[in-house]
Image (cartoon, rainbow, N blue to C red; front, side):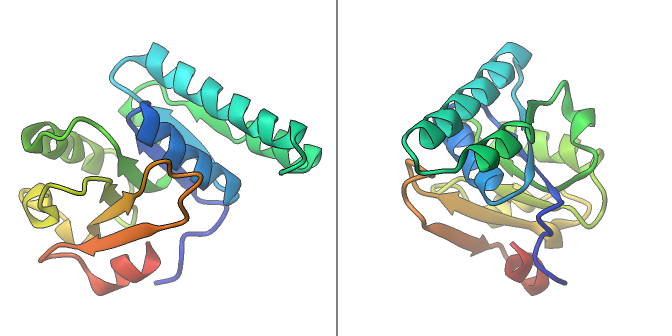
Length: 171
């Protein structure tokens, strides 16, 4: 398995502070980014805030204008989980509740391709427990971004009991 291509879509579920930060990191790494939230208005607002941050980076000279415009054109709010179907990586940053996360990933697994990676941003819940019940738990792992994600260039990759080593390497 190889790393996720820059042309691969990264979907972020959860449009709060962490979700926005993760979306910004993926966006500036060159990926198309979709933000999903249970409330579509929150997803749209999250995408807009990321666009504003990218604009500010360009205004301050930390990102060239062409790069900023390119990035701004690659982020959107997803209108439902079905919109995540072509995602190469789905990262959730939702409430720290095992049952909520497990139900979410069960739904996501039914939408995305079998080779798509599924990741949780949790730092406190068991990756193994979250993967329990998935049809393909080998592609599930933890990608714990530190807050604020755009400023702290550190991501902890956490394998669960069933995580395929190739999936962890790819992530």
